Image 1 (tube, rainbow, N blue to C red):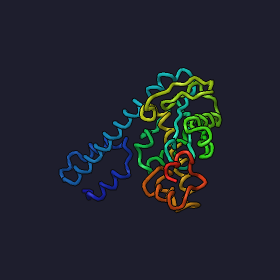
Image 2 (image 1 turned 90 degrees about the vertical axis):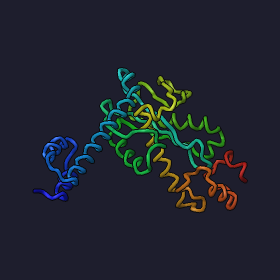
Image 3 (image 1 turned 30 degrees about the horizontal axis):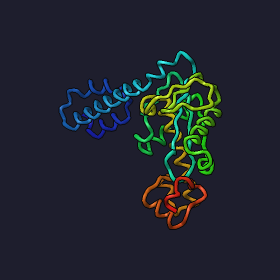
Image 4 (image 1 turned 120 degrees about the vertical axis):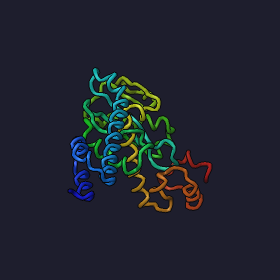
Length: 251
């Protein structure tokens, strides 16, 4: 008889498609440790199926418009921080996209965002990034800067999409048809993918700025107005990447 340790190893090495055979193989093994391992498999399988269902529900807009051709999800990150750029991303996913766990980037852990970032870049038909500097934000205001970043992201796509799925906004000066979706990063896999890539891209930029200006804590606050960040502005004054129009109340 196999030891529980050996069975645990067998299960760890098995793919989910092999679970049914394992359930049958060990169904008569009355040891509590074995049954506990099988129950863990069932829970893992149920969670996977639930995620597949959730992801499929997030393809509602993709299915609705797939007859048009390439669909592009667009989202931005960095409208609220006191420092750093606003970053937008445009993502065209393949029609048969099988990426699970796509969601509003704010609902994901940093580790999961990093993992999904790599998967999205690997599987996407095309990805475009746009970034607008703090100086430009001060010059034209954050809303117009956000639109500018989105237009830049669209312009960097390698293929021209037939429709844009946007998180909430309608982007001026864009001739491609657009569908604004309120809270779209939680309702569309394409927008969710753009949300994740934009977030990881901007976070990495802020971590690089932190190496140059560690006194502001950009690696942890990402430029947002945490209490320690505001205190640093008062103590050291603004850095070259602070938005003058956002920090005027602190200096």
